[in-house]
Length: 370
Ligand SMILES: *Cc1c(COP(=O)(O)O)cnc(C)c1O
Image (cartoon, rainbow, N blue to C red; front, side):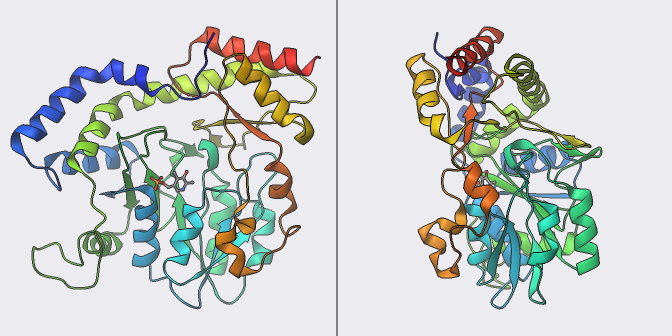
């Protein structure tokens, strides 16, 4: 049996006719940028996550940068960022000239360790970017409390957490702004790079709208220096076709996760991810931990049996060469430094069949019982 890590082809076959019709329409009208598909997707996505304003962007990275820029972060400011995330979260801070200050993660949920936030705050700390990693909301109750008390701006990195909820509220509504990625492999994926930034703050929305197109919404009028962060009509069309299926696909991810939990429980050597009280996990990834010294052999064994796995994230950001100038040392974030050698991402996507999930669990069990 073959079990791909992510099966985008089967998903495409489900929606092929609708995609083709939308693409034909765009080609016939030769309207490729900022047209009706982008406008429609912004409205639909904003409604799906129940947020006031939504701006479609060229990628999740660009959406993050628009938010940090529009919120006025810059040289001299410090921004708290979990050390266990994709590097784009930190880059968005660096691009503004501000300094990312890393915070270790909670060993059980992989999200920012709220107990370690306070000790990282200095008089220069202006903002915090909680990441809802692997699809699980960070502890937004605790983070909002600290942010209120310490007067910090919250920017949610929800790039892996479309439709996830915390205490009943959809992520994207907990900060001044939140960003989503529609990279093809994300829970809602385009057919190329795409992203969105959302907010409930109209002034911030207007500013980000200007930043998105060279500092002005009216052609040839530039009120400020901006950039080009627009989404293509083709990507917006793909996303609008996919969005009505997202709830069903998310429910299937959650079902697959429940099967993994049931069928992998009690295996010595396998630690399952835990879910925080109040958090609805949308399982962008299903990440388990195995003993570091057996990880390579485990992944090879699964590969020999036709099962693809992933590693997120192999090198914590503070040990990346790109951030050497911040002078962090090995030992600064012991939880992340340990988990990066132990994590394994199992196949996760809505197209997985029960028989494939059972097969992955069976092979995992047989590896650890030998
Ligand atoms: C994917 C991702 C991003 C960046 O999104 P792109 O669309 O790839 O630019 C940022 N943060 C996190 C946590 C991500 O997973």
